Image (cartoon, rainbow, N blue to C red):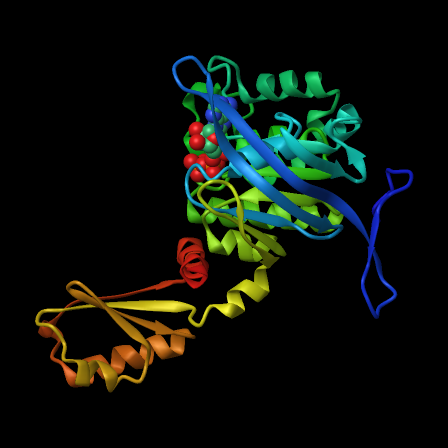
Length: 332
Ligand SMILES: Nc1ncnc2c1ncn2[C@@H]1O[C@H](COP(=O)(O)OP(=O)(O)OP(=O)(O)O)[C@@H](O)[C@H]1O
Ligand SMILES: [Mg+2]
């Protein structure tokens, strides 16, 4: 159960239903600029007119091209930066007025957190638990789950990038946050570790009723952990803010199939497959809804052509970049 931290908390009522949901994060018309130029005499606009709300139980994914302000937005939620305009409330606490209350509830896990190389993992965790007045024992289950417990007396200088990422996450957990903000934490993890970390975050979320705000490039991570998605344009404005499931449904395909033929395929042949496609230089890209349809294209292709006529046949699931460009193209 969520313990209501807050007096006068702010709620959303859902029309037609008798459900009141607490608003966990409320961002209104946020703008952020940074000084730039040789004499810092100019300003670049990094975020503009950012407005959205997250209700209890919802997790957010932030997606957008490099430099679109994703990290800046997470840092504003973590009170590392303050907005130049607009307001941010966390459980109805204004970040300008109640900054220390907000800070108590939030952990921001940054890939930029660096370590004292000569310290062991145990010493490092002790150092951070000292700052945060918390106990290493509390995060032992997490350390065990991801195998870091075996490395407690190893120095951080010997850690891989993936192990360092998990150490940063462990440090983020030390604080027992209500809101966990994750900036590309899974980027350096291999597939197995990523699964383990996501499983653990998912369990933790179910148990502690966390709110997650994360930046990630992997649709699997977003699909597993997040309910809402915020697509940022270059220039830091909102392209879309929606339910993850709604956005995925708006896109008319799930998998694309790339075929590199030795000789260009005739339009008549391509049409006969019965799937939407586009020709891009030397290859053709088909769009399908399911893995079964991918198999269908594969079988038809090898019925029509000899194996040596095809240089490559490959398939991949919809990526977040594909999704981003789909909505960007729809807009123009
Ligand atoms: N402290 C700062 N001072 C000056 N400019 C900054 C600062 N922090 C970020 N910026 C600028 O703001 C813009 C947005 O940066 P931000 O790191 O938020 O983008 P991002 O979407 O997280 O990008 P990436 O995908 O590369 O991580 C960039 O142009 C960046 O150079
Ligand atoms: Mg970033």
